[in-house]
Amino acid sequence: MTRFKGCIDIHKGQVKQIVGGTLADTDVEGVELKTNFVAEHPSDYFATLYKDHNVTGAHVIKLGPGCDEAARQALAAWPDGLQIGGGITAENAAGWIAAGASKVIVTSYLFPGAALDRARLEALRTAVGKDRLVIDLSCRRQADGQWIVAMDKWQTLTDTAISADTLSALAEYCSEFLVHAADVEGLCKGIDADLVAALAQWSPLPVTYAGGAASLADLELVDRLSQGQVDLTFGSALDIFGGSLVRFADCVAWNASH
Image 1 (cartoon, rainbow, N blue to C red):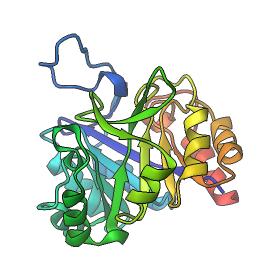
Image 2 (cartoon, rainbow, N blue to C red):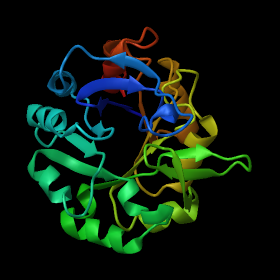
Image 3 (cartoon, rainbow, N blue to C red):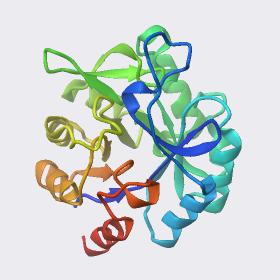
């Protein structure tokens, strides 16, 4: 069955919810950062909240520099209970596992020059093991209907399309996939239903989908579209992140009853 998965997005040391498609450095011409929420609480508050309510498999994402301290604070609040992503490399991955992460999540490191590098995949698998590795295939939908993996805060398209062949090949290196639909991330206007259905059909591994979820009914929709094979993350819609569309308590109750 589809389960609610938590997130802790950290930007410049603070927990935030950001419209994913605008996430870029201030020096990216024509891109203005749109922030939906800035938390008053530190990162460990949310980590403890997830721990206390048994929201397993939550991910901490470092969105740029200045986030390491807050990330470590979250991991320390729930050792081996949270995944960590953002700036993960073969050189630092084991260090984040030692700091308390259950798994490391990687995207941009795998795509130097926006091209998938198998040697880096192998180096990461060697560094932490297949069971500790999550590959983030966050993507943008193209005019031809394909979803192309995007890197560098979702601003740069890579050479890799999400497909059955892609997921099958990458499954040799990791234990699960994380997929943000960057075009709808943070907009609270609904999920990419086609992508959810495709992920369920194509992926041989567990998948967590994020992007656009705006009501508790989206958990039911993802469960139906994926036949329970894809999990769902709520962000900006959630009341603990300043949203008014989805109650955290209802998501916890969903997990408890499924």
